[in-house]
Image (cartoon, rainbow, N blue to C red; front, side, top):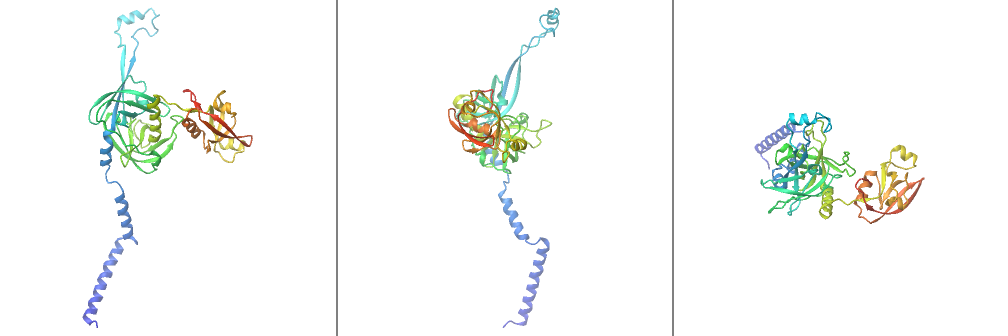
Length: 378
């Protein structure tokens, strides 16, 4: 049997416990203990520092320096050699140098131990000399293996021992909101690392017919071009290529070429030193709401054939101007840009099924893909 003294002590203990719980309840909202646990779990899942990722990825990032020799005419009369005063000007004033060097810089990333380096086409375009500097301060002359203006991808090569190699990721697995790092040589500041997230994917910015950019708010500036976009595992998921800016500096809108597309181009450049693309032989435009209504289409998907190249694959197959291509090799066509990419990826000589809507009916044709002439489109 409980004594009176023990009973009162129990009441005091219960009161103290109730008071303490009341104070705790005032300090945090209902469910606060669960909220704090969730916050702690969320904080634990965030990377505390990108230092380890940067250390892992930086050695394979290089600086790319280019030189372009420009011929400068001798100073004379503005009217040219036929002017009577031409000789007078030449004798009176010293001549300017006949040749000047235009220098530029960018970034790149070593993709294998044989010395192949990925950079941008616009970094090495028209370069007479290419020099590559590694993170360990070694410097090598580089040769241009090949370049593709349409995707802004270029491949150069150096010859050296113990070259570091970047680990490549899968850009298709990259999600909007994922953390990424941009590493490069902005304004000549070597091995600069900036962090951000993936802002969007499959961006079309009007750079070319194969636009498929990763948008990021990781700071990208002049000199970053050709450098890698890195995920939190230290793997390359893109090659930095362009920025949107009114001032020339970063405002948080940068664009990178997905690494999966880059490596497709690299494979072609290593094999052929140029890009071999498939060609369907049509000029196309997207289907607008007005066009969809006029053609009796149920949606705005598809690619309208606005022109056709006589003797080309589509023309020989029976496709006509005014047809709306709605499927290509069994894949529904959403827009003309998507179809351009698909046609370009098809091996030369491959027969493909092209489905079109013509005069309200659906028809199928078999076209044999040819190699794309450089100056033409899909």
